[in-house]
Length: 213
Image 1 (tube, rainbow, N blue to C red):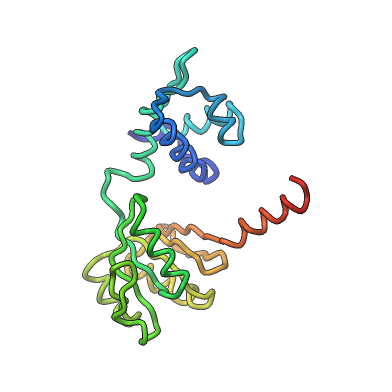
Image 2: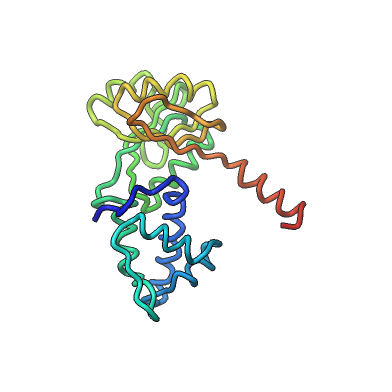
């Protein structure tokens, strides 16, 4: 099922939140929900909920009943996870952050499978990380040529991420999950970057606490 209109980035960012909440409804046996009820949970308006659903497919609410939870979940699962085949991912940077992120990828049903991990530190090579032996970064080209990963998870300092991004695109990587503490921009039309700033959430929390929001 194809979306009825191209979803904007803000809409796409709301889809996982819809998905999590709808999963919780299904787990307690709730079969339908109104746009007003969804909006209250999402921190938005009923009109915005309806507009979001217009972008993602054939989502029709019933007067007096609302939206089918099962139907919404089926649409969202197809959009977020495709046909169920997990995207092969590699990890670059196996320090403390890389270790934590690798554990999250391998222990959550998120549509990805971690197939390799790389680091420039020779002392780490051969050690396991989330059940996968760490490889030296010099093995990157040979591995990618053989296994064709689609996603790179970057747990590197800023300079390292900048240097390796073009190299990864040349190796066929088209998705980047970037934890390098700056907004990576990859100047290739077919590459997609998701920049993650853990500190932003803490700063937002601090602002709200200090300013009474």
